[in-house]
Length: 312
Image (cartoon, rainbow, N blue to C red; front, side, top):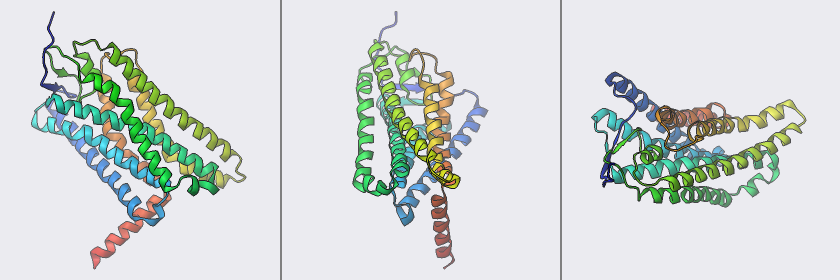
């Protein structure tokens, strides 16, 4: 039987050994990363400079865009470096730092989406009291609670992971430091960590999903009482972008994390993880921009101002 050994570095297998596929993968991820950062930075800039976008809804969208940039940056640049340089080695400390940030931003996204659904509930169901309920202080407090809740969720299992011992093999079957393949190569008893991860994941999923579902049940109930079809369409249009993002996020979570054991094969999940860490952050700015008249108007106004100054 193999003995446990001290690990100072890991090797990330990535997605493929084929050089041609690696080139295509690099181009694909590089383009999606640039588009993701550019799109989300555009939304952040617009919500900061446009007076029409100084509302709670766009404050939360601003934070969501920042979160998307942070999440994709925690995953993709390191993988791009690995593909371009051929260096798949990642130090022990760097690996766990990456694990911390990817998990932290991932969990944070669920709490923020739940908060955004509550914001839509107040806006549609209590429009006359919207600005009073969702004051600047309340919005900042809610964002702070989201960050604290995400931190409290991931710290217990992650702190236990820091004490893991490993076999002589230090190969992680993934393109990032993910908890599942790390536990797979550990020679320690991982049962407690597995149970904690499942409990934390289910707790996060259920709590945030209940908030989203209850909010939208109330929203649909309120909208159904609107007298005109035009009012109903306008109300639903303010929620459509958020509903799309929620559906993609929760759908992906169900596909990846609802499984019997954390040590199962992760080959399929690696491909899905690439899409979540590259495609979703890239698409979200387009979803919110193309389906939101105020954001489109703000973007057009900003482009006109830039064009005007360039012509001077």
